[in-house]
Length: 332
Ligand SMILES: [Zn+2]
Image (cartoon, rainbow, N blue to C red):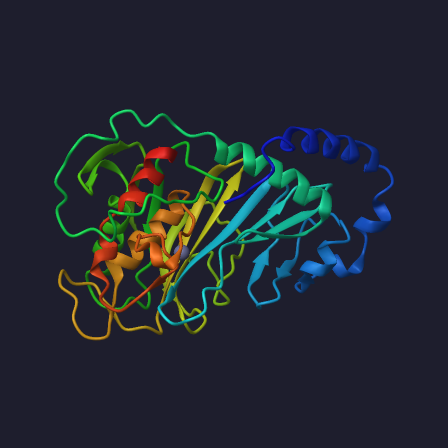
């Protein structure tokens, strides 16, 4: 979790805003730096403070992100196959004149002024927790949850202020029933929820609008391309070891689009029961929709839906654990 910005946040924000005003006339030389243009902008180049309005940022690990419009954050939120390296959650925020801030898990990089602004803003967003009245009501869960002993959750810094309207692109899908499994992954977080002897009502909501031929904004590197204005779940190539990636675009902490890509390279099960060495699509989709609604990763040993890696036929990931329930309740 983010630490030590609680008291400093407001002060840093004030200082940074002054700096933006002062720099508006004199930063042209920095903004024009050629290293901050084109399709190979490095994080090191962003550290110069350059303002960027187009092009592609390339992380040291090779993931690529189309520079979002000024005032927009794009986050790439993966789930890895167990045993593979967790590439980490990434957020790229374009602050406009203060440049671009990059966060990989809890590590920050990019333009220093943008990092200060975004850190302070993120602290404010994630510090506000909705009252959890009614969270302790007893209930019986339908199936064995992933973990009822771990209360942890993290927040990526955005939430939806409205229902998530989304579509499904079946091109390349691994088996019929895939969309049903992906829809169930979303439903795990919405409405009346019961797990671990507790029940809450989540105001997170979505509406499935049917199929589309439109592409998902998630790219084969596991990064995010440009926002299309339509939320799409789809299939495609991802790097070895990555099962799925969710990209979310948000403005000032309010999500505006979510795209998902499930890898065509893995063996998947989209049926009620899972057997063999296949990955359970519904369980992985539940994790990815947790990201879509604004939750980040917990520790792998938390046993929660939001841990970063999945094993084959991990059907327990279909059911929220205690921390997952508390996280969605805090957000919605
Ligand atoms: Zn994840």
